[in-house]
Structures are given as structure tokens and as C-alpha cells.
Length: 423
Image (tube, rainbow, N blue to C red; front, side, top):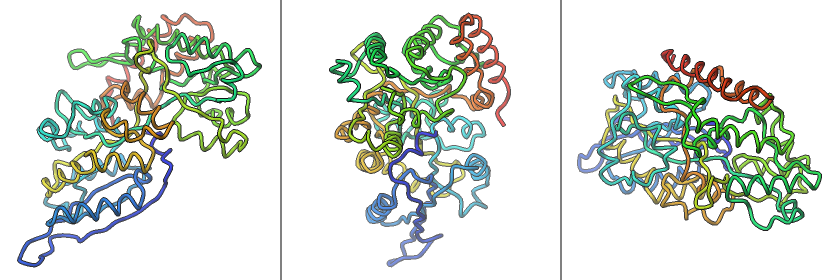
């Protein structure tokens, strides 16, 4: 969920419409739909234009859009979902939540089932899987995909040219070959920290594996499957072509700073970080390019972890029809593509990718997002991340320990964490 903080426009805004039921001309009562959106998810201008058109085309509805901070939002949303509708006249009717947060809100029964609306005319078949899957529990859709962001490869065009690499690699093997060439010029072919488990997840998914799987209602860690071990082996081969620390993640030290020093050819990161790199090293302005994380074959990019937001409706809303109308508009093609263009996001559907085709970094994200995934769809996954055994496993596998043995140990720890009720 850090990914959405990389939006290129960061504005906090509160657009307040009429509150309560306000009699209008002819005796028609106007209703207010209260919408909670997260800070930096949309610009002030976007929200103003959306509100103006929505209220104009929905003559009986007013919007009350309230911007929320990410800090402490989980507890605030849970409290709103647990409030009885009869005493919640000022509560939210629509809430933006992180895509991987949806399962924890479903757990308490506080979200409205939106399956019928999704099936009817919202185009759910084209939704990005990394947004849609976390919003779905046992074939019931609670979270409606809104926008996404994911990792790509940020690379130095000049260093690729110097190494004789004419086009970005499209397969794992091409990527290894290109990175070896880049190393030969005295630079780091790639900077990849040893505990970048989000990137590892994509390689595991490419091989048909997963971090954990559910069987008969019980979740268990699956890092020790042959597929997951193949993903770790590719990570090991790629990581060895640079000087990333094996005992730290991509934030320690921040990989943007390492890249900005000028001796690194590639990093795996969201494209928004390119601005931070150029700010630290203006000499790289115009030299940075982007391509999707390569896959096993050239016909499609590699799988990537997808961050982003879903829209949910509380069960206790007293404005159900109005809330559904807001979600339909925000997630619909017109406003979703407008949001993507404004904020440099990936639209919520694969069929809308052309809306960001003119922006190299976002286009690379959109290509990868079509193969995107999210963490296992259970609220207990938060227990895993709290004391993440995947990171320790990666370090041990990269420093000579037997990967299969360490994967079994890490999988047992994941299974144990998933057995503890969240919260």
C-alpha cells in the first residue's frame, strides 16, 4: 500500500456538500452520500470536477467527500463499519480502502455484497486481478477495483546503449544476459536488495507457486513447493548480478539513493520513484526508462505485486442506492481513466490500459498489472507481515543455506501466523 503514496499529485481536500435531507423545489428531498477517500489518491481538481458532474446527473444526490489520513485508518474504518445505521447519520456510505485490507473488513460482516452489481454491468471480467481478487471472498464481491500501481524496471538508457543492449529484455533469460553485460562495464547491472519479498513474490507466481494457499478453510505457507523454490532460484541468480545487501530490504538503504549515485543500471520499483532519483541526481534527467518486469516467456510480462485501492460500501449505510451510484461512477470507464491520467495510476481494467499508453512509466505498469497479484486473501496475512519470515528465508537462501530446508521452516512460520485470528 506504500505504492499509492507515489502519486505525482499530492493534494488534501475536503469537499463538503449539503448534510442530511434537504427539501428542494417541488418537495423533492435531496440525499447526501458521504464518501471517505484517502489523502493523495485524487487531486483537488479531479474531485471538484467529479462532484460537479455527479450532482448534476444525479439530481437528488449531494456528495460529501471527506479526505482521510492513512495513519490509523484501519481502526477508524472498523469503527465506522460496526456502528448501527440508526446512530450513524454522519458515517461513510462509500470508503476507499487498500486492496489488501478488504479481507479484514469482510471478516466482521461489515461490507455490502456487491456481486449482483458487479455481474450486471460493471465489467468485472476485465478487472485487474490484483485488485479484484482481494475484494472477493468465496465468490462474493465486496471490494470494487479503483486504481492500481505496481513495480516495473527503472533503467539507465545510456548504460544500456553503452553495453550494446538495443531493446529492454522480455524474458527471464534475456534479463539475466542483459544484466551480465551491464556488469561488464564496471557498473552494477542491477541493484536488488536481498529481502525484497514483493519482487520475489512475482517470480514465485511466474512459476505457478504462491506464498500461501487455502485448503478446506485452512491456510498454510507454500514457499517450499517446487514452483516457489524455482522462483527463489531465479531471484538468487538475478540478485547476484549486483551488490544489493542480502540482509536488508529495498528501503535500507533506500534504493533510490543508491541508484542516484550513478553506478547502477537497473532497479525494480514503481515508476514514480524516478522523480526522486532525478531530484537527487539532476544529471540523470532524460536518461531513465521503464519496462515491465520480464516474464518467463516473451508473450507476456512477469507477475507483479499489485498495490492500489478498492471501493467498498458499509452494510450500515442508509443511502445504499446513492452509494452504489457513486461507486459505479468512480469505477466506470470515464472517471477511472481520468483519474489514471491525472494521477499516473493504472486504470482498474485491462481494457483501459490504452488511456495511459502515452506515459512510458505508467504504460509499463499497466502491462505488468495485467499479470498482477496480491498477497493471500485472508485478514491473517497481516500477522505474517508483522514478523515477516519470508525476509529471513531470503537472506539465508542467498548466503548459502539450503533453500528447501529454509523454505520449509519459513512455510511453517507462515502457517502458524495464519492460524492466529487477526486483531
